Image 1 (spheres, rainbow, N blue to C red):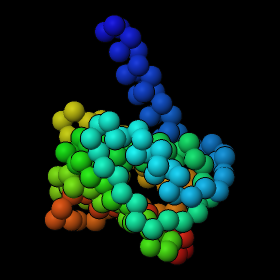
Image 2: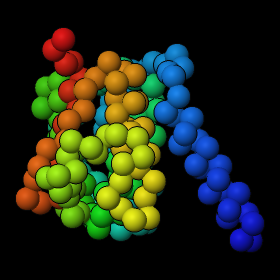
Image 3: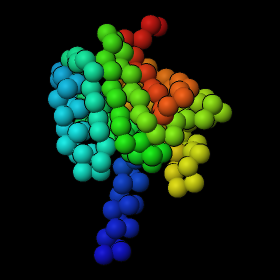
Length: 160
C-alpha cells in the first residue's frame, strides 16, 4: 500500500512537471464557467470546501488544462486553510478569492516563479503551472494583496 501511494505521488509529480514544459496545442472548446464550477463543487464538497460563482460567461479554452489550473489554485487554497472560494465574473475578468491565510506581501512578486514556495511542504510548482496554463490561453493572471485570503485576477482579454 505504501509503495502504491509513492508511485501515485511520483506520477502526480511527473504530471506537474509536464505542465511546465513547452506548450502542446490546445484542444479548444467553448463552455460555460458555471459548468466547470459545478464539476469543481462536486469534487471538493467532500473536502469541506464551498465554491461560489458570481456571474457566468462562456470561455473558449482547453477544458482539461483549465480544470488542472483550478485544481492547482484550489489545492493551494486548501493548503493555506481556505474553506470558501469565491469566483466572480466581471466582463473579461475572473476574480478568485479564498478565505485562507492569503499571500504575504513579500511573496506576491514570486508567487508564480517555478520552485518558489513559502510552504515547507510545498514544491513551488502549482502556481507556476497555473500561470503557464493561463498564458498558454493568451490570458493574464495577477496576484494581489488582500486582508482576507488569496486574491487572483484572470484577464481573458489582456491589453497588449
